[in-house]
Amino acid sequence: METYYQRHKLMINLLVVFLLGFGLFIVHVQTPVHFLTTKPTLFVLLVVSLVLLTINTVPLPPKGNSLSMDSAIFLAILFVFGLNLSLWTLFASGVVYGLLKRDIAWWKHLVNFAMYTLMITGAHYIFIWTGGAIGFFQASNLLSYLTTLISYFFINILIIGVFFYSMNHPQLIQEMKSTLQKSVSNYAISLASALLLALLFESNAVLGVIIFTVIILLVSKGFKEYFYLNEEINKDRSYRQQILNSLPVGIITADDKQSNFSLNTSASCLLDLTAQEITDVIMMKQRPLFNSSFWEIMLSKRICQNVKVGYSRGGEDLHLLVSQSVLHDEEENIIGRIFYFIDITETEELEKRMHQSEKLAALGELAAGAAHEIRNPLAVLHGFFSLMKQSFTKEELERYQVPLLMKELDRINAIIEDMLLMARPGAPRLEATTFKSIIEEIPTYHDMVKNEVELKVMLDDTEIMVDLKQMKQVIYNLYRNSSEALIDKGVITISSQKCNRNYLIYFKDNGPGIKEEMKKSLFHPFHTSKETGTGLGLTIVQRIIENHQGSIEVYETSSKGTTFLITLPLSP
Image (cartoon, rainbow, N blue to C red; front, side, top):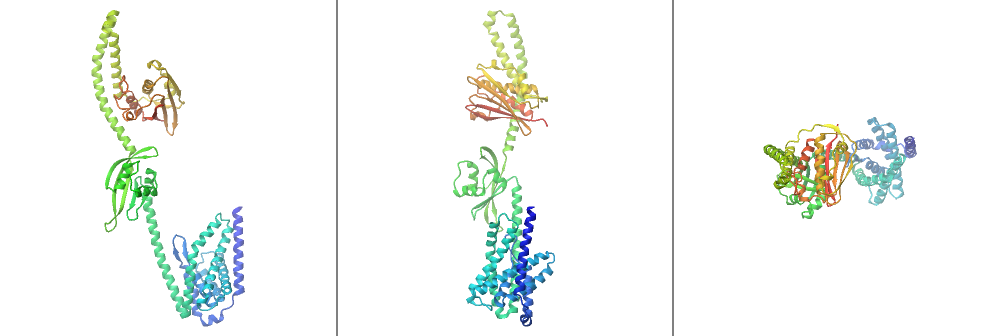
């Protein structure tokens, strides 16, 4: 309904403009018998010139703007020959142009004719009212020439404003201001061109029109070529920028002559900086406190290839592989630098995991071999001590410390079991279950530590595919590890949540936390800060979780406790 109303209002306004323009033409026009009989060639040349200059406008950047010199001819005719000839040349050129441009709707030709009639007629009366005299150029008429142009200009803007208003344009004022700003210089050129043509009329009108038309056509052709080249350059620049932005490599280019920098999308995302922010850092000529290794290379302008540096971004630590080289112009002069880098954080983590796996595999093979060799004589010793326990009296058992020896043998056997489990945890036998049911099948461990431990289980009923026996071992080891670190009244909380296609299990305690220097080697075999234990518990946990295509990490640690995060894939 609103669109129909807008179209209806626009049609009414167009009709009003047409009737006003056509009415003024009928009222003011008279047959130019004298001019046509005395200067027919000039009249024809003026019409031809108007048609040619209407078709061959001068293109201006940005794309879509142009300068039409037909107004200069209308004003020159108005100043020298008066209103009647201006309207006749408008009519004749409009007819010729309409026949040549039949693809344009006929009503558009009529509205355009009416608009020019209103503009020319209004400008004529302003010219006469301000004291202007019809005839060849006179310096005393400069004020009249200027006011005539201004009136011509504002009538045009007023008509355009009426059309915008008819369409209920949401930004009418802004569009009017924009049109004014874009048109002021164009109309100033039109006035200068009109006065130039008026001077040419005085010396030789026919030759003047020809010279004026040829000059404008040559200017139009030159500007079109320039505009075409400018568009091609912009397209090429945009194309190259799109290529740079599509690359997963961060690229920063430095123009040493103008001291400015540009960067692609990947660089902005990786560094979380804009080109202006990078320029500000470089202009300070001082290495920032953060990410000093990264900025040191840029500030030093040192040529390098594939240098690993760390970069912190919003609490996230990245590993970047950076390179820097110089840029040359066609004459091999240095004009700038290109600094490019890639994020190798995931690659570094993968390499660490592969290195860890290789180390564990080698250590596991060694441990398995040693464990088997130790286990056989250990079984013999355990058998003999069992016989001694059965045959000795109580006094003899206490005298030879047989129970203590058997306890220590059991401890050695437990260490061997851990070593074998670390070496070959075995391929998991997957079956559907929930972590809540796994916890319920494990007996409580309050008797394993001297302090009382409260266990809080906040797990949902999400089913996952895991090896029950191995996952019980994971829970057992984590529970034992946390409970042994607790002081006084301890609380261990096990919770979970789903995230995309992963299942996250949080194992949290309220112990004293893990020291920063111990975090890096926490999952290394035989690493422990306790007086007892083998240091294999977390290593076994990591091996089992990785065999389930998951991961385990220290999610957070502080003086208020530690949280381990286990990430396992959900069933497809």
